[in-house]
Image 1: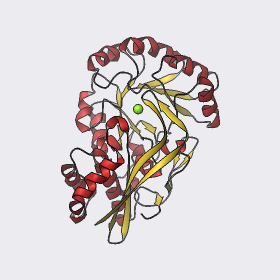
Image 2: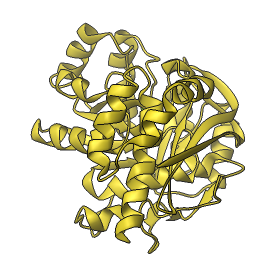
Image 3: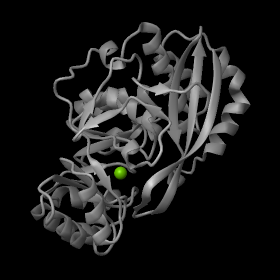
Image 4: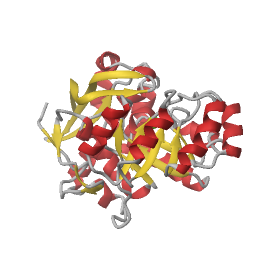
Length: 338
Ligand code: MG
């Protein structure tokens, strides 16, 4: 196998703000795996609060590149195990390589991953569209700019209930909120009933990721389903979330790729938890991988490319929240060779 990679700094349409800060660009790492002339692509955006930069992905890969390339590739699951042991501290890099391996595998078989996995395309959740934190006027403006059936509203600031109240005046769409760890238990107990009255269907990561005592109380009292994001990073976290959250938000980058994500989906379902699959801020490459997994989950959050002013791949389409697939094999994206 031959590996190439590139780094990009993707520009947002609007500066993107969540409870943890604002960014104007998204740095991202793209890997290309070539095997007998066929090329597969994978992506891992850098996320500062997980402390892995694109530079760190490049450094780790450069150090062990010969091992990544010399693996006798037969299937992505075996490859993931190999990568996981090569880079135990860098799930982001493993994600990009695992995703590229799945894209390659699909292309070698001439089929989309959904077809290879025998998934039922008839009941795929629509994807939400994210409204980042801004002045209330700007948030209303951004929402009106993008008529959509489901919005994920970033909250976790003092006036967030007022934001949702104002947004509600302008649409009947489904709302979900993502607090990104921004509330105390007291705030959560006070705000969740108000948000329920405003037609919010679920709350993502209300409390700090390590606040399990707070989550226990909130789980018992909450009028809305609670989803773990920052509290559910890797496979071992799924079981920890039972009794604290009603569901989990799986992200390929933090869990280290498609291979562990499929196991996490199965595990969460076995534990009677709901599953959301979510994107980071990322291009159509990473988002296409989410699209392939979408038939397996209850909620989809794959609007990454919609928030960008520029993309590095094509092939991911939406029709008012509905994911539009093409006939391409693997992930189903067109990427210019690196
Ligand atoms: Mg989240």
